[in-house]
Amino acid sequence: MPKFKTNIMKLISLKSLPIMLLLVFLVSCEQDDTFTQEAVNKSEVVLAKAAPCKGSNCKETGLETVNLGVADNFVILSKTGVTSVYKSSITGDVGTSPITGAAMVLDCTEVTGSVFSVDAAGPACKTTSSSMLTTAVSDMQTAYTDAAGRSTPDYINLGAGTIGGKTLTKGLYKFTSSVNIPTDITIHGSEKDIFIFQVAGTLEMSSGVQVILTGGALAKNIFWQVADAVTFGTDSHFEGNVLGQTGINLRTGASINGRMLAQTAVTLQKNIVNKP
Image 1 (cartoon, helix red, strand yellow):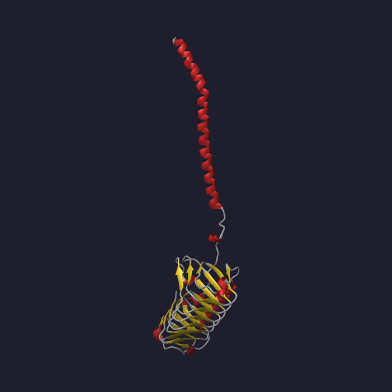
Image 2 (cartoon, rainbow, N blue to C red):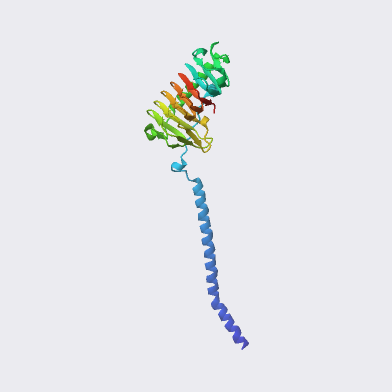
């Protein structure tokens, strides 16, 4: 009887062996599948990181800033004069060249900074520095040409030139005619983002309208290259550097955080002007 039991047990063990082997095989396959899936997942992660960024959300403009040279030292620089209806508040340096300093019709109490003239004429607080002003004006004109010559715009004639209510992101904007800002606009970007606006006509901002910066965008990185006259309406507020081929005019109570670099004249009427 014991011998019979032993034989039966052996038989059972032999019959169970295929089952056990099958179980081992299935477990092994499951582990292999898990490993394979993990490998696929890891591969997808690597491919996702290596894949080039596509779509508007990934767009890189690659814009470089506009080098202002010595003109960067000024908040107002012009070739044919600066006039102010008292009292404006100007923070930053002011200068004009090649016209005589007599064309700077402003009071020394309006300026927190230096006033530079090409000669002995001009406000009592002026400093005569003809050679420096010549360089600054030359750099201003070079900066204008640089901004105007940037190619491959990201946007052409956005809003048919009427951009009120829009949020503008980094990039190069080209307008083949005038630009009107009848309502507030927002310029959104990081502190490193560059914005360049090429305007073939006039630039006009209506009374009480504001340019609002969000996301860390900085006025010093915003450049408006304008071929015709620039006018900011009563009590409006502007952000950015204006490179004007003709006049830049601020109506009563208007303010700007930026530079006004004009190849003709700059006119003020009780304005607030701050260098960014």
